[in-house]
Amino acid sequence: MDLPVRNLLRIEHPLYEALGLGDSDCSDNSLLDAMLRHPELIACPIVETPLGVRLVRPAEVVLNLLPNAQAAPFAKENGQPVIDDQGRRVDRSSLE
Image 1 (cartoon, rainbow, N blue to C red):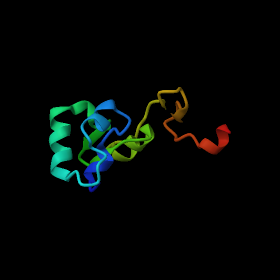
Image 2 (image 1 turned 90 degrees about the vertical axis):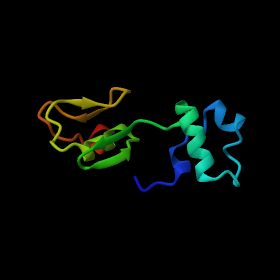
Image 3 (image 1 turned 60 degrees about the vertical axis):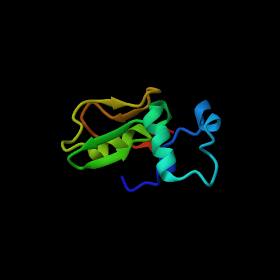
Image 4 (image 1 turned 90 degrees about the horizontal axis):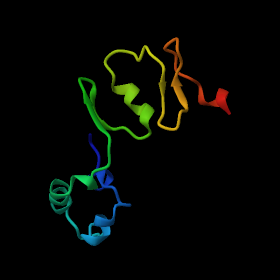
């Protein structure tokens, strides 16, 4: 994914502070060990396809990793449409 390990942490999780993961002297190996022991610390979703691996936030980023175009309607968790019923991306500016 070519991201710093720290970018994969859920910093708002109570364990982040409890384990001292915010300390600047906390190494990448220590962060990875904490993430292996406590998977709930891992920001998600992380998606892997033949086109690559990404942390998909916001949710529509996943569309860039799909080997085939999204053909059905797709909406974010909050109901905001991303792909219409003709398989076209919805322009956010047209919704505002």
